[in-house]
Length: 411
Image (cartoon, rainbow, N blue to C red; front, side, top):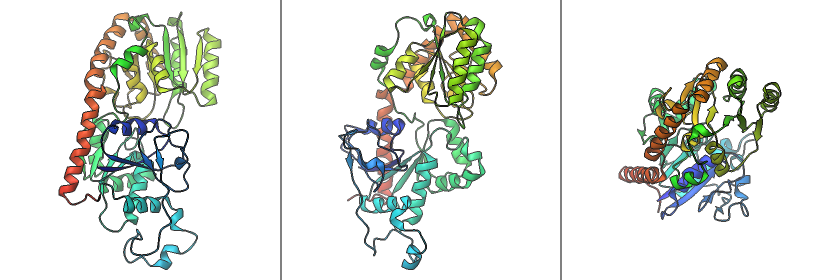
């Protein structure tokens, strides 16, 4: 089977999804949808796209092969709708070989994949849709993956609404990690078949988690983690305000803030320490394994955002026994029960978040019982031995249906 992924080349989420297919006798390809360097953890994949930094991967990812498309020959293989004149194709300042969608269409025509899987909508999905419009002949079977806020937030913005609907109307299959987003996709006009609802980051090795986790019950931990995103979606400053409101009950605790890229977050974290005397550490960018270690030392992990799907940091928290306080704008309600195995809070209300922090600090039984419940959820829904077979079966099913409909292109 030949699969062409269209994805963000430096995304660890893309890498973790693709690497679930290692060990299979499948031909795996990646067309980068952004001009970024390839993630060093990618393996056994051919990367396409002329003139992208993603093709310069010699030392960072030795098991990845880079393939630059040759310059096209004008003629019958030109991947544009029939009837478009050569003058129109080349008129003005636009040259087709400088257009990313055109290059993707060329790649698809030469590669003839059985399946195209666009991993995310706003970059990969839009690009694949544009390539499809440039494509003459039968387009391969197309799976659209919904990541994070692709529909839940961007679907409410005028700039994106029509494009999202066009992507969903054109795809053959749709996959996401929230039942919420399955319903939204149908509401947005998705005509394709819905695939299994699975985490976009794939599964985990439970034995590895045990090695990274601090011994003893989570109630014995004295670290609170806060996700430091303050962006179009992240609300780290609200979290810092909530911690300030709850400071009286945090004697003997320390606070760790990770992914604090904005200066406003770094300044607010320093002021929190100065005003309360609670040690606050800004955690530098680290590996996935080291981030798991941080969650494995935390009693509470806080993640606040106005929009998300299954936040990876939320999953990391429940993997490592940390009590999650997560914004109610995510799909965390599909994984935990508020007040029992975590707290779901409005992302912009520091008073409610502060109350959740106070309760999680004061109630050892709540924290330890939540860890037990979440550990069972992790075993049932995040173990790679559970998820990987479902992913493999998903592609086999899609390929079989494509073959029956005559959409398989590989030779």
